[in-house]
Structures are given as structure tokens and as C-alpha cells.
Length: 258
Image 1 (spheres, rainbow, N blue to C red):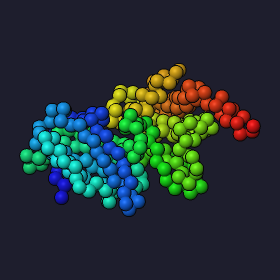
Image 2 (tube, one colour):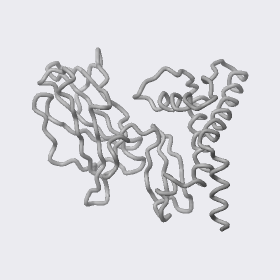
Image 3 (tube, one colour):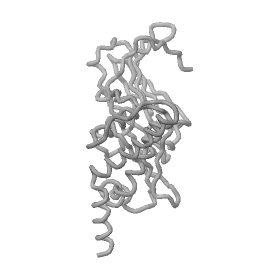
Image 4 (cartoon, one colour):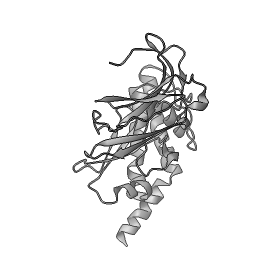
């Protein structure tokens, strides 16, 4: 049974203190490894540390000892967590000396690294997942954090997504449009205040750094919604301009016809 927690006074654990990496398991599912650097953060040494894996369909919790005596569990397989959508993680530091444990610190919505992925990508704007999409080449998953799903039945699809001129020109502008629609139209979020724990904040910060793109407009009603839709198109155009999408697509066409 999971004890109830008191959230009063909790602190945010910096993402730089946590690295989660997905690993292949024997049953074709996932296991994970966690590198936690929590000792310098000043939590009481007898505080318990937990790592939780979850997605929209499932959840597991793992005890990692205490701040003063960290200990990895013997079994880190995600036996009760479905592989789709891609699992995310949270880390909790809990004072369990009280009847209902006091949550002292938390890092949530942590995107795991792949086995050989560089640690610098642990705060990726758009994590990539490879799965069987049938006859679709790509799909955007927006259940909790934007994830680009690529069809693992297409040879070299990962390289095409990383460096391909045609992929950049045709796919990424539409991904950006879908994500901004989710933020501004569905969630009605326009606050550019930065919070590295929220994907909406990360994406608005990214778009705000594009040349010629202003802050997203506020406002309510049909007029406000119309201004937000117009701003989304301006942001997509700014992305295409900054990445030279038209020129790169023309280059891809020339390569194909040569």
C-alpha cells in the first residue's frame, strides 16, 4: 500500500540532479537505471527516496533507500508499466517519520534517455520513440509530454529525422503547429514565464527565441482565439525561416532528381 503524502513545503529537485535511462529487458519490455545526485541538496539524510515510472495507462514505484544511504532496488524492470505511451519518471524525497509522509522534494515529468543517448538530451523538447506505426511514417503523441513516434519499420528513419532536409521541411513545421495548437488553443496557455518542469513553458521559450516571433497574445473570446491562431501561423513561419525550410526542401528535390 502506498502511504499518503503531505505536500506542504515541497521543493523542486533540479533536473540536473537526476538522470533516468531506459534499458531493454529480457521480456522485450523496459528496465531502467537511475543516477541520482541528491546528497548536495540539503535534504535530511534519513529521508526516503522513491522513483516512480508512469504513463497514462500504468504506474510503478521503486524505493531507492535514503538520502544518506542510497540503495538501488534489485529489480528495475518495468513489469507493470506499458511500453506505450513512452514511460516518464518522477523522483520523490519523503520524510516518513510522520503518519502521512511529508513530501520534501520532487522532480516530475522526467523524460528517460535511450541506452546510448547522450546525457545532454535529458531535457529534450521532443523525445523520439521508435514503434510500429503500420503504414504511417510518424505520429505526434501529446498525452502528457510531446513525443515524436517514428515507424521502426522504415529503414534509417532516425537519421532522416535528425538530418534529412525533406523531413525538416515537411514534418517539423507541422509538429510545431500541432504542439502550439495544444498549448494555446486546447490548454489556453500563453504565459511565457519559464518553468523547466512544464513542457508548455519549454516550448514557448523555444518559439520565443525564433527571430521575428513576438510573445503569444492573450485575450478571451473569439477575438482572442483568432489572435492566437494567427500567432501560431507566424511562429511556424518563423521556424521555417530560421531553418531555411524552403531552400532545404528544394535541395532535397534536386538530390532526388539527380
